[in-house]
Image 1 (tube, rainbow, N blue to C red):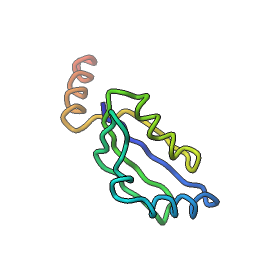
Image 2 (tube, helix red, strand yellow):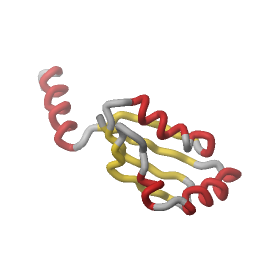
Image 3 (cartoon, one colour):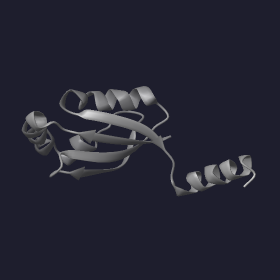
Image 4 (cartoon, helix red, strand yellow):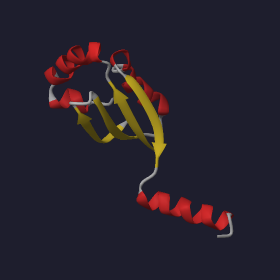
Length: 99
């Protein structure tokens, strides 16, 4: 399953988390732990927020990864579908409504 993870960082946490993140190696930043694949991550540094797409069948593993960042920011997680998956669901919903 794919999950969209969005976060926002409060102003008083901004510099400490920026210092932590920017001092990590690329390998450390990419390490999501066992069972979780990061598809991509994008940062709005000016707005102190960002979004990432992760893939896993182990929600506990995703939450374990997010736990290292949770003390520094507010995090929201939502399951998401890609275009093909969304189109298939859309067809089923249309059929369910007889439209």
